[in-house]
Image 1 (tube, rainbow, N blue to C red):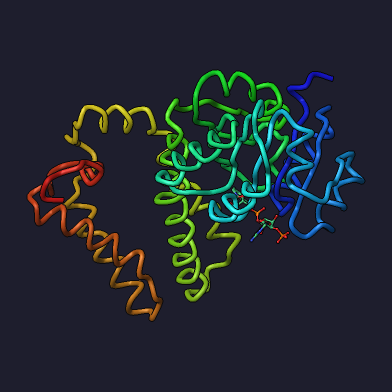
Image 2: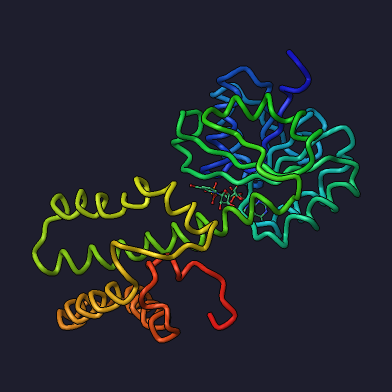
Length: 290
Ligand SMILES: NC(=O)c1ccc[n+]([C@@H]2O[C@H](COP(=O)([O-])OP(=O)(O)OC[C@H]3O[C@@H](n4cnc5c(N)ncnc54)[C@H](OP(=O)(O)O)[C@@H]3O)[C@@H](O)[C@H]2O)c1
């Protein structure tokens, strides 16, 4: 077996366990370590070797996948790793962009190469075609890690030479966008339920409304790139008036909807700035007065 496929997985929580199981099932030589040893031990049934110390796990590996709860925990665990010379650390722990570069430097001090990676998906997606891993860091390290990471299925993509690149993408898409959508969905579902609409009726309609972004994605991307906010479809002012009507519907029903209230305020702010005749995407523009 190629040394490239000698992989250590540090952290056997929900995600780390899914990563270790999939890597082992697809031919990697996987060593696992976890603070609570039982979770690492459970992975021996899937063909992984469980070890008692971080140093032992790292010592057996060329690629060190880290999937712990926070970067602070990663820092602490690396303190027990010993030398990382000849190894590439792939840190899949969720973190903010400003944490990536210090982590890269920290790993370099221990002699190792570093990639920062973002998992866009749930543990059940690991190994499937819809698994998505975004990786940032220098090209030679990506070349070293590419083959084992490909075993995870889906698309592993190198998105940036800068260590923070993947975390920026994650903060924008999974963070500011997806997490707000989840909370907004919960608000909407509460309102629908209180009005006697069944989840089976509500759900497909909600998905259909959300998919507007999917079928307009190329046009929207072009308009954002060009800062072209002209429209012959719907102005921000039209959105704002409609939004106030819906806000009345939700508030008069007694539904607490702080995210929707914030959206209405954003539309109102854009109109007050004189952007009412623009398309709604005008709100995505960085303006000095925004
Ligand atoms: N689950 C997902 O859908 C998902 C998706 C994308 C990204 N992620 C990211 O993946 C990372 C892991 O998530 P998860 O869902 O696997 O979480 P989890 O099941 O809660 O696992 C957390 C892991 O961190 C370890 N840990 C926590 N505190 C520690 C400490 N002080 N010292 C040593 N180890 C410690 C835990 O060890 P013990 O077992 O000993 O507690 C466990 O291995 C997170 O950064 C998460 O944001 C998760």
